[in-house]
Image (cartoon, rainbow, N blue to C red; front, side, top):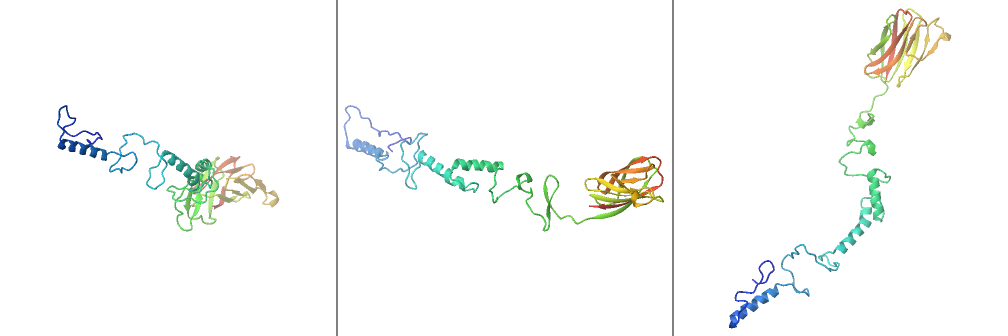
Length: 283
Protein backbone atom coordinates (compact mmCIF):
# COMPACT_ATOMS: atom_id res chain seq x y z
CA UNK A 1 0.00 0.00 0.00
CA UNK A 2 1.42 3.39 -1.10
CA UNK A 3 -0.24 5.47 1.70
CA UNK A 4 -0.46 4.82 5.42
CA UNK A 5 -4.21 5.53 5.94
CA UNK A 6 -3.63 9.17 6.89
CA UNK A 7 -2.67 10.19 3.35
CA UNK A 8 1.12 10.02 3.92
CA UNK A 9 3.12 8.28 1.18
CA UNK A 10 6.10 6.19 2.21
CA UNK A 11 8.64 4.59 -0.19
CA UNK A 12 8.76 0.80 -0.10
CA UNK A 13 11.43 -1.08 1.82
CA UNK A 14 15.00 -0.68 0.43
CA UNK A 15 14.59 3.04 -0.11
CA UNK A 16 16.28 5.35 -0.14
CA UNK A 17 19.32 3.52 -1.56
CA UNK A 18 22.83 4.22 -0.36
CA UNK A 19 25.97 4.90 -2.33
CA UNK A 20 27.28 1.77 -3.99
CA UNK A 21 23.94 -0.03 -4.13
CA UNK A 22 23.53 -2.05 -7.27
CA UNK A 23 20.38 -1.15 -9.20
CA UNK A 24 18.43 -4.34 -9.86
CA UNK A 25 15.18 -4.93 -11.71
CA UNK A 26 13.52 -6.28 -8.59
CA UNK A 27 14.28 -3.12 -6.64
CA UNK A 28 13.44 -0.76 -9.53
CA UNK A 29 10.21 -2.49 -10.54
CA UNK A 30 8.90 -2.64 -6.95
CA UNK A 31 9.75 0.97 -6.23
CA UNK A 32 8.35 2.32 -9.49
CA UNK A 33 5.12 0.32 -9.11
CA UNK A 34 4.69 1.67 -5.62
CA UNK A 35 5.15 5.24 -6.86
CA UNK A 36 2.67 4.59 -9.69
CA UNK A 37 0.11 3.28 -7.20
CA UNK A 38 0.58 6.39 -5.07
CA UNK A 39 0.06 8.69 -8.04
CA UNK A 40 -3.05 6.75 -9.08
CA UNK A 41 -4.53 7.27 -5.59
CA UNK A 42 -3.94 11.04 -5.81
CA UNK A 43 -6.56 13.53 -7.12
CA UNK A 44 -5.74 14.98 -10.52
CA UNK A 45 -6.08 18.76 -10.68
CA UNK A 46 -7.86 18.61 -14.05
CA UNK A 47 -10.83 16.78 -12.46
CA UNK A 48 -10.40 13.44 -14.25
CA UNK A 49 -9.96 11.45 -11.00
CA UNK A 50 -13.28 10.26 -9.46
CA UNK A 51 -13.40 9.98 -5.67
CA UNK A 52 -13.67 6.44 -4.30
CA UNK A 53 -14.40 7.49 -0.70
CA UNK A 54 -15.68 10.34 1.44
CA UNK A 55 -13.57 13.49 1.28
CA UNK A 56 -12.57 14.60 4.80
CA UNK A 57 -11.84 18.33 4.81
CA UNK A 58 -10.71 18.29 8.48
CA UNK A 59 -12.61 21.56 9.19
CA UNK A 60 -11.07 23.28 6.16
CA UNK A 61 -12.96 25.17 3.45
CA UNK A 62 -13.41 24.39 -0.22
CA UNK A 63 -12.93 27.82 -1.74
CA UNK A 64 -13.53 29.50 -5.12
CA UNK A 65 -16.43 27.15 -5.99
CA UNK A 66 -18.90 28.09 -8.73
CA UNK A 67 -22.68 27.98 -8.22
CA UNK A 68 -24.36 24.61 -8.96
CA UNK A 69 -26.20 23.84 -12.20
CA UNK A 70 -27.11 20.13 -11.91
CA UNK A 71 -29.28 18.42 -9.31
CA UNK A 72 -26.36 16.69 -7.56
CA UNK A 73 -23.94 19.63 -7.63
CA UNK A 74 -22.78 21.05 -4.28
CA UNK A 75 -24.41 24.35 -3.30
CA UNK A 76 -22.33 27.42 -2.54
CA UNK A 77 -23.07 29.95 0.20
CA UNK A 78 -23.99 32.54 -2.39
CA UNK A 79 -26.42 30.18 -4.08
CA UNK A 80 -28.06 29.24 -0.75
CA UNK A 81 -28.35 32.85 0.46
CA UNK A 82 -29.95 33.90 -2.83
CA UNK A 83 -32.40 30.99 -2.72
CA UNK A 84 -33.48 31.74 0.86
CA UNK A 85 -34.01 35.41 0.06
CA UNK A 86 -36.23 34.41 -2.83
CA UNK A 87 -38.25 32.06 -0.62
CA UNK A 88 -38.83 34.70 2.07
CA UNK A 89 -40.07 37.15 -0.54
CA UNK A 90 -42.38 34.68 -2.31
CA UNK A 91 -43.42 31.69 -0.24
CA UNK A 92 -43.12 33.01 3.32
CA UNK A 93 -45.26 35.99 2.44
CA UNK A 94 -48.14 33.95 0.98
CA UNK A 95 -48.06 30.39 2.23
CA UNK A 96 -49.97 31.03 5.48
CA UNK A 97 -52.57 33.31 3.85
CA UNK A 98 -51.98 35.83 6.62
CA UNK A 99 -50.76 38.37 4.07
CA UNK A 100 -50.79 38.21 0.30
CA UNK A 101 -47.78 40.40 -0.25
CA UNK A 102 -44.54 39.85 -2.15
CA UNK A 103 -42.39 41.87 0.24
CA UNK A 104 -40.79 39.77 3.00
CA UNK A 105 -40.50 42.68 5.44
CA UNK A 106 -44.19 43.52 5.11
CA UNK A 107 -45.09 39.86 5.50
CA UNK A 108 -43.12 39.53 8.72
CA UNK A 109 -44.79 42.66 10.04
CA UNK A 110 -48.21 41.22 9.26
CA UNK A 111 -47.32 37.96 10.96
CA UNK A 112 -46.30 39.89 14.07
CA UNK A 113 -49.56 41.85 13.95
CA UNK A 114 -51.53 38.63 13.73
CA UNK A 115 -49.73 37.32 16.79
CA UNK A 116 -50.69 40.39 18.80
CA UNK A 117 -54.30 40.39 17.62
CA UNK A 118 -54.29 43.39 15.23
CA UNK A 119 -55.74 41.39 12.36
CA UNK A 120 -58.96 41.69 10.38
CA UNK A 121 -58.69 39.31 7.43
CA UNK A 122 -58.29 35.80 8.92
CA UNK A 123 -61.10 33.67 7.47
CA UNK A 124 -60.32 30.29 9.07
CA UNK A 125 -58.13 28.59 11.67
CA UNK A 126 -57.55 24.83 11.65
CA UNK A 127 -55.60 22.37 13.75
CA UNK A 128 -56.03 24.24 17.05
CA UNK A 129 -55.37 22.04 20.09
CA UNK A 130 -56.60 24.65 22.59
CA UNK A 131 -59.83 26.60 22.17
CA UNK A 132 -59.59 30.35 21.71
CA UNK A 133 -60.61 32.16 24.89
CA UNK A 134 -63.29 34.84 25.01
CA UNK A 135 -60.54 37.46 25.19
CA UNK A 136 -59.10 36.06 21.94
CA UNK A 137 -62.46 36.25 20.19
CA UNK A 138 -63.41 32.61 20.81
CA UNK A 139 -65.71 30.73 23.18
CA UNK A 140 -63.15 28.86 25.27
CA UNK A 141 -64.91 25.54 24.59
CA UNK A 142 -63.95 22.75 22.18
CA UNK A 143 -67.34 21.05 21.88
CA UNK A 144 -70.79 22.52 21.14
CA UNK A 145 -72.30 20.19 23.74
CA UNK A 146 -75.72 18.56 23.53
CA UNK A 147 -77.96 19.33 20.57
CA UNK A 148 -80.24 22.26 21.43
CA UNK A 149 -77.82 23.82 23.92
CA UNK A 150 -77.09 27.53 23.92
CA UNK A 151 -74.00 29.49 24.93
CA UNK A 152 -74.38 31.18 28.29
CA UNK A 153 -71.95 33.39 30.20
CA UNK A 154 -71.14 33.14 33.88
CA UNK A 155 -69.45 36.53 33.76
CA UNK A 156 -65.96 35.20 33.02
CA UNK A 157 -66.38 32.36 30.49
CA UNK A 158 -68.83 30.81 28.03
CA UNK A 159 -70.48 27.45 28.69
CA UNK A 160 -72.73 25.22 26.61
CA UNK A 161 -75.95 24.61 28.52
CA UNK A 162 -79.59 23.78 28.00
CA UNK A 163 -81.67 26.91 27.39
CA UNK A 164 -83.46 28.37 30.38
CA UNK A 165 -87.18 27.72 30.53
CA UNK A 166 -89.68 30.59 30.19
CA UNK A 167 -91.08 32.62 33.08
CA UNK A 168 -91.19 30.68 36.34
CA UNK A 169 -93.47 31.87 39.16
CA UNK A 170 -94.35 30.76 42.69
CA UNK A 171 -96.84 32.33 45.16
CA UNK A 172 -95.89 32.30 48.84
CA UNK A 173 -97.79 33.70 51.85
CA UNK A 174 -95.73 35.05 54.77
CA UNK A 175 -96.69 36.91 57.93
CA UNK A 176 -95.22 39.65 60.09
CA UNK A 177 -96.16 40.39 63.72
CA UNK A 178 -96.53 44.17 63.67
CA UNK A 179 -95.54 44.42 67.36
CA UNK A 180 -92.04 43.03 66.70
CA UNK A 181 -89.02 45.30 66.90
CA UNK A 182 -87.25 46.47 63.77
CA UNK A 183 -85.19 43.76 62.03
CA UNK A 184 -84.72 41.56 58.98
CA UNK A 185 -87.08 38.85 57.76
CA UNK A 186 -86.15 36.01 55.43
CA UNK A 187 -89.04 34.76 53.29
CA UNK A 188 -88.47 31.38 51.63
CA UNK A 189 -90.42 28.82 49.64
CA UNK A 190 -89.85 30.08 46.10
CA UNK A 191 -87.86 26.99 45.12
CA UNK A 192 -85.47 29.15 43.06
CA UNK A 193 -83.55 32.43 43.21
CA UNK A 194 -86.11 35.03 42.12
CA UNK A 195 -85.32 37.99 39.89
CA UNK A 196 -88.50 39.99 40.58
CA UNK A 197 -91.42 39.95 43.04
CA UNK A 198 -94.88 41.44 43.42
CA UNK A 199 -96.31 41.59 46.94
CA UNK A 200 -99.79 42.42 48.28
CA UNK A 201 -99.59 43.35 51.97
CA UNK A 202 -102.52 43.72 54.34
CA UNK A 203 -102.88 44.01 58.13
CA UNK A 204 -105.64 41.67 59.25
CA UNK A 205 -108.93 43.35 60.37
CA UNK A 206 -107.72 46.85 59.35
CA UNK A 207 -107.79 49.05 56.27
CA UNK A 208 -103.99 49.12 56.11
CA UNK A 209 -102.65 47.64 52.86
CA UNK A 210 -100.05 48.16 50.16
CA UNK A 211 -99.13 46.72 46.77
CA UNK A 212 -95.44 46.73 45.97
CA UNK A 213 -92.85 45.18 43.65
CA UNK A 214 -89.10 44.77 43.36
CA UNK A 215 -87.31 44.51 40.00
CA UNK A 216 -84.22 42.47 39.04
CA UNK A 217 -81.93 45.24 40.35
CA UNK A 218 -83.74 45.38 43.69
CA UNK A 219 -85.49 48.66 42.97
CA UNK A 220 -88.87 48.94 44.72
CA UNK A 221 -92.08 50.94 44.33
CA UNK A 222 -95.77 50.62 45.12
CA UNK A 223 -98.87 52.24 46.55
CA UNK A 224 -100.62 52.05 49.94
CA UNK A 225 -103.95 52.87 51.60
CA UNK A 226 -104.00 53.45 55.34
CA UNK A 227 -107.32 55.25 55.81
CA UNK A 228 -110.76 55.00 54.23
CA UNK A 229 -110.07 52.48 51.47
CA UNK A 230 -110.67 55.20 48.86
CA UNK A 231 -108.51 55.37 45.73
CA UNK A 232 -107.88 59.09 46.13
CA UNK A 233 -106.22 58.39 49.48
CA UNK A 234 -103.65 55.92 48.07
CA UNK A 235 -100.03 57.06 48.36
CA UNK A 236 -97.09 56.11 46.11
CA UNK A 237 -94.21 54.33 47.84
CA UNK A 238 -90.50 53.72 47.43
CA UNK A 239 -90.52 50.82 49.87
CA UNK A 240 -91.27 47.09 49.72
CA UNK A 241 -94.11 47.33 52.27
CA UNK A 242 -95.60 50.30 54.12
CA UNK A 243 -98.44 49.57 56.51
CA UNK A 244 -99.94 52.41 58.53
CA UNK A 245 -99.31 56.09 59.04
CA UNK A 246 -98.13 56.91 62.59
CA UNK A 247 -98.11 53.45 64.13
CA UNK A 248 -96.66 51.33 61.34
CA UNK A 249 -93.95 49.05 60.02
CA UNK A 250 -92.09 49.84 56.78
CA UNK A 251 -90.08 47.18 54.90
CA UNK A 252 -87.23 47.78 52.49
CA UNK A 253 -85.88 45.21 50.05
CA UNK A 254 -82.49 43.69 51.02
CA UNK A 255 -81.60 40.80 48.69
CA UNK A 256 -82.67 37.98 46.41
CA UNK A 257 -81.72 34.64 47.97
CA UNK A 258 -81.43 31.05 46.77
CA UNK A 259 -85.01 30.24 47.87
CA UNK A 260 -86.67 33.63 48.29
CA UNK A 261 -85.87 37.13 49.55
CA UNK A 262 -84.72 39.06 52.60
CA UNK A 263 -86.40 42.30 53.67
CA UNK A 264 -85.70 44.71 56.52
CA UNK A 265 -88.50 46.07 58.71
CA UNK A 266 -88.43 49.41 60.54
CA UNK A 267 -90.97 49.96 63.32
CA UNK A 268 -92.60 53.33 63.97
CA UNK A 269 -94.79 53.97 67.01
CA UNK A 270 -96.81 51.06 68.42
CA UNK A 271 -98.41 49.12 65.55
CA UNK A 272 -100.50 46.02 66.31
CA UNK A 273 -101.94 43.08 64.40
CA UNK A 274 -100.52 40.67 61.84
CA UNK A 275 -99.43 41.61 58.36
CA UNK A 276 -100.05 39.06 55.62
CA UNK A 277 -97.65 39.24 52.67
CA UNK A 278 -98.94 37.58 49.51
CA UNK A 279 -95.81 37.35 47.40
CA UNK A 280 -95.49 36.31 43.75
CA UNK A 281 -91.89 35.23 43.08
CA UNK A 282 -90.72 35.34 39.46
CA UNK A 283 -87.60 34.54 37.44
